Amino acid sequence: KEDAVTYSSDPLMFAKRAIMLLEALKKQMGPVDLQYVGEKKIRALNKSENGLGTKVIHWMSKEMQRWAEPFGILDSAGNIQSKTSITPAKDHSQSHDAAIMTKRDCRTVFIQVAQQTRLRSIFLKNDQTRMRTDLVPKVLKQSSFLSTAWEDRPSWWNNVRGESHSSCQDDVDLLAAILDYGYGGFDSMLDGDYSFVSKLSKAPEEDTKAFTRAAIQCRINHLTRELHALDDSEEMMNLVKKKQAKRKSGEVEVPSTNGPIKKKKSGGIQSGLKAFFQKTAPAPAKKQKTPPTSPEPAQDDSDVEIIAVKKRKC
Image (tube, rainbow, N blue to C red; front, side, top):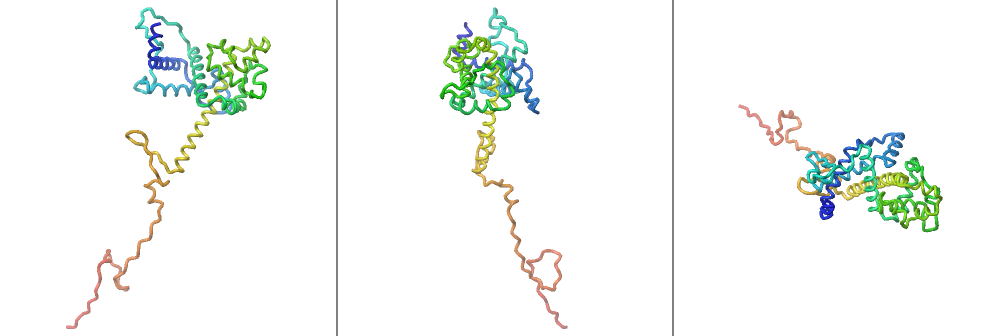
């Protein structure tokens, strides 16, 4: 109770402890395979991590690193400091371990946190209209999505019902609902105003029994995995467009030792290379002052005029 009051009054401290606790889970869960090479390996990795794949987990690791830096919880090597308990045992003599988590348990928890975090970031960037009319329809057509089938999919899922419902409305509502309630609020979610809830209430009993937390988590993981891939591609395209726009405007980034990156205008060719591309004009011919028949001088005496002297008879 005291800890709850302390952290509620100091959310920054609670955020630090939460990040460090996630880092402890990540360290204990084992390595993450990111070698997406070959179709067979790609299909295997997409089915791994309960259908979430490994790219979302890798994204979560980088996101945690970004969070930890402003909080000042990086060690001298740049790694996130980790703690296995929010409350240090030394401060409470009667405290005890609530649970001992195996490597599999750590991985399961971290996967769920990564999925929810990544999905929320995508919803923050895009409104539900775009999710319903653009992103989710694209996901449903992806071959990588179709290769990971939802075994517990109800027969009525995503069936069109009226003009106001698209062919992916159930999926969009499911994603929004899991962000609203989380997996812990699954029972309360089934009382919400969502398209799949009204269909579920009229479905056969066998469909109702099959619609469990584990069943929907599989579907949510598949959708999150493909939405992450789409968002990642969009980010890369936007980065390429920005670089192209800078090149067209002649703006070149110059690293600065003090402060942020400075920008300067350029003519398109580096100043040190301009001389290389410029045509050199031929040197003007020197005026010859020696007689045409005189021998070529051994040294450069073009500025010396030779005067012929007549011999006198003695």
